[in-house]
Length: 113
Length: 118
Image (cartoon, rainbow over all chains, first blue to last red; front, top):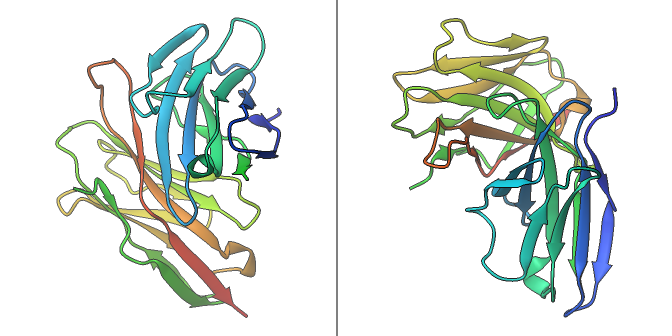
């Protein structure tokens, strides 16, 4: 039973470029969460999605960041016009239901030059 | 105010000894959940153990146990018989009850870095 998959594992972008981070939840999980971890800090909630719906995006920056979880395919976290402060590890988690334990992917480490 | 507080930025423990990692939380909800995750140097987040606010027994998973003291709002992780592979960052997290959006939020502490000495 494959766990949560994230790709790429490492992503390097120059300032002003776009970053696309992908997350495939565990089989059977329809709830996806994105978190950001700055160096030496804990995880900060960004957004919670179910298939085709954003349920809670209260942790998402208002500009440049967007997320989707289409009917088919992985969830995508998109960061437009990246800045150096976007450099962080971005984790995706999935759960069977929103009351259930979240299982995390390996993360994508974004470095903005 | 911090919702999850981990006061120990770093801890050392001798191999084969037990170690307790502290976690206190702050919530006014009656229904909540407490989690511990391990993050080794490779970076992934590994789920270790869960305690529900209504669970009367302390949770245990192998060498991991959660010392849940509801009145004190603490949920300390106890690792028995430490192994070198236990060296990692450990995060305490809380899932609060239903919010206006009808969903739950996970809030993470800042972590404790554990080093197991041979």
